[in-house]
Image (cartoon, rainbow, N blue to C red):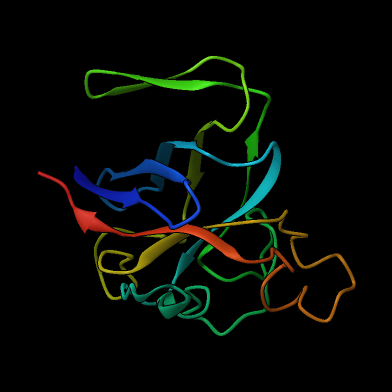
Length: 167
């Protein structure tokens, strides 16, 4: 079992922790909690670079080792880093000691994703890359906007974190 973690932060009050795990050559499971987001859908992607020297802008484009167009997680033609959207309900998050709890009040998202294209080992490993949460919904490459086939027209980058190995 290989495990990784990314601690997300931003200058906009968005924060969270995203965990990755992979058993052997199986799919990678992504779980996490985010807080400080506006209710609704937010694009959620693995970006190519683990560089935050200029905030989330220096994380580069979506991770795309196969050179495909942007798409939905279930699409054959998609970037490896295209993980779709996280849903933020009308939740409230609070912290108790070091634990975060979300109770159906504004700004929080808890999610679990399983994906075959983001391995934690091998030549296309996502270790050392970044995970990014966007301001707007990802249109999954189907929105007709000029950015749909490259970014999903998901808007600005509101939080990011570098994916590192977890002990």
